[in-house]
Amino acid sequence: MLKVPDSKTAEFSELFENHRLHNSACNIYFQSTRMIANKARILNRETFRDFYDGKLMDIELVSSPIDAFVPAEDSERLFVTNQLVPEYVEIAKRVTLDDIFATLPPTNDAYVALKENPDKLDAVLDDIFIHYCTFKYLAQIDIIRLRMYSNLTPLIEYVVKEVSLKELQGFLTSKKTDVEKYEKYCKDIIFNPDINRSQKFYGIAHDDIPAFDVVNLMMRLVKNLVFKTDIYIILGIYMTMSFAISDIATKKNDDSPCVAYVRDVLSKL
Image (cartoon, rainbow, N blue to C red; front, side, top):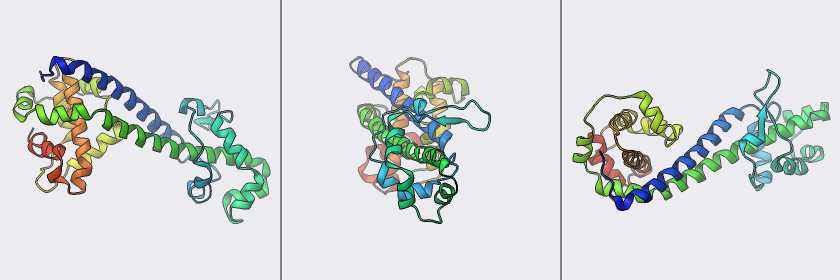
């Protein structure tokens, strides 16, 4: 059992539940990005970045991915764009056939395709909408993750100050791992791309921080979970590791309590 004072239980519970919601939103945006990325058919991402990124990214994202992209009824495509959502409507107002001919170079694939067949305008607008959503979704992930770190600061600070190496060693009575238990307790609180990044980063040594296996550590911690409050501390431990990466990478080791905790506690488990 990892002790959580009664005075902190309600606060950590609220932080934990908010984190789950934020993490769920990140995963939705991430999976949606994976679904739509590279699905443009005429106007490619480079063309969007060069000619339309500055013109369209001021459009506010208000529709959820599930509203913006709906499952296709045919077997050739995974989804179709919803041309009725506000973002698509605004893009269609700004990006007309005349605008495209005035903006793109005559050798561009989209320009050539529309000169040959103006009826392909809807397909080009679909591509532009896909690229717009891809970059908006990635930006939303960054915004949400910054909010997650900010919201969890009290939990991270508690872990760094109050959860000692001795306490964690006493908690890890079993060295075994349990994949099912890990999935049950961590799938809602860990952003998959982030743990992949952490695993890769800590898989090699950094100055006086030896290499260690992040996933194995998390699985061992969860394996020994007994009380509901244990997961609060486990989340705090993971976020401490994740938060420390930027300081380690930029050589701010002496100034960061999180880096010291990774070096002096977590890397020794």
